[in-house]
Length: 576
Image (cartoon, rainbow, N blue to C red; front, side, top):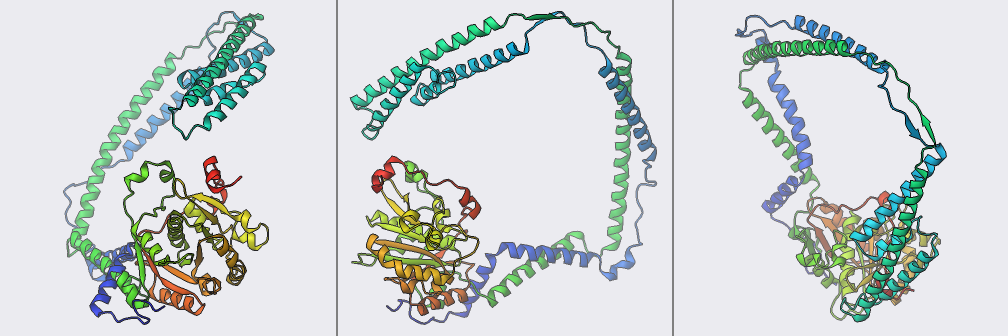
């Protein structure tokens, strides 16, 4: 089907072209800043240290201060005071270390065995006390269960029976969780759970009192020990010497600081006089000139680079230069307040926003009128952007009651697993290596309160798989996937699409993702042409006008836990 913008690119006015290049150059502040700082430093040095100014170095103006203050005597005095202070501190520390302790009275002690037994019983009492305090402050089933499962309570057969009863009541009460708290049966089960918990609490209190009685029986003196008296050394003289030395250090430091301040002022005046003699222009003018040079050269370098390798600046330029339709432009938007009310929306990944206009427009172009099946390949230089677009399009398809699956083919970065915050293994790499089959590599992700999509992650690998192997896999398995799913979304790299992946699918529709101000026009044109040559049908381009998605790294994905399959998810998906 011919593109609505025409099969061939249309010319762009020179003024519009130059404006777009300048706008893209301004989108590279890091490059401009790096070049500008280097130019600023070089220009400033060249302006200050120019050879024609060297003859003025010796012309130093008269300084208002006649003689520079000498700090050597004050430094020597401070060093002597510190030496005296160090000697006084050492003597005082030695005297205190060798001074005997004051006489102690006769004390009663326990044997080591009884002391260890008393300490273990005290720890048990403290643990029971903490759990009882938690029960009193939060009388919930979890608090009672934690109390019953403590080491001091597990040996009691009555506690075990009460704990089993509590578990049964909780299991029955969970069956009424979706009907609301006003159900009489639910209230009765809640009251029964509270009654069982009170029984556990009563047993725990009795156990704590029993342990306290054991501690009181153990706390009897086993033997008596007498501490001998030793004489106490007098450190008053050393303390006075230390205080005197500290006073001298403070006085010497104050005097040295004042002299150094005067010397610094003298040096500043001398330096100012030298600079006034060396420079013909004011320092502010030199700084301003160097700054202008830096900014001009930084922007000029970015502009020249943009002219040599132009990047996409907006939707109109992308359509005119490539001849392909721009389906939508994804821009950041504030999070809807309505999404904060439901836990499923609050726990969704950061870039999951299927209600955004850009994703809705993309899906409308894919799901043509009367189309019973959707099969789409989404690719781009940044597979993270392609994964975010693909997950939102798949969520829209699932919201229309289509059985949906999203497949990731990039094992190096696992963008789909990173975008959905799920585990990346097992995945497509394991299927290709025949370690698992398709059903074992498929997991399910909630995309709303009552909608799920199947996900086949890429697996984990330090190198990319051979594109020909991936293409061959889909050539043999695409028909089977089409029989099980009404919407199939594949995330691939540009190299994978150029290798013929869309051409082996029953529906070769392909969307390329590009980033405004960063994706080069030549690369996008080459990618579109490669898709056409490989037998694909490039539906259009999705532009990303925002910072790239901050997705987790492959190492973090590998360490992440697997998704939790709750009872609600199993009920929705029909899993056992």
